[in-house]
Image (cartoon, rainbow, N blue to C red):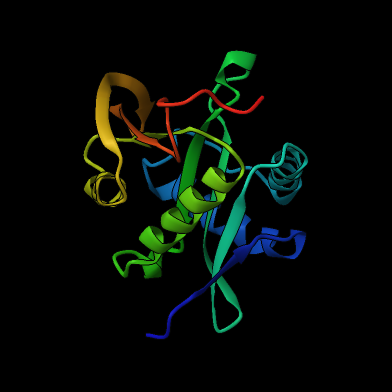
Length: 176
């Protein structure tokens, strides 16, 4: 398989992004959303992240978007302004080919270049070994599990919390 192109997302990519996320909502436990957002809502979310200066990337193969990743605010309060939460989603046929790791590595670099100091992964479902493994291999450490906080597909689900320092992390004060 040829290597994917990883690049900043554009509005033209959002139909494909919406389709990838729709499948994740309807068939997976990586997200705890129950109803897939439509293109209008996904466009609103994209615009909000872009307006906030956050990185949003897509992976494309032969001109077709096959995955995406973005970082957004971890929490809305100002003291969290140097911390981001990441999301990575792939088209179902593309899983386990290293593309998620490539997206995450580039996302880490983009967030670090923007001056963020910590990245948090909130991984849906403690059985999501693929996502936990990709995050571990890219320098995230386990910080805890919230047991039984989501209910989807007739069962209780955990969230796994992982964290990675970006740049100097907490060893120096950030530039204000």
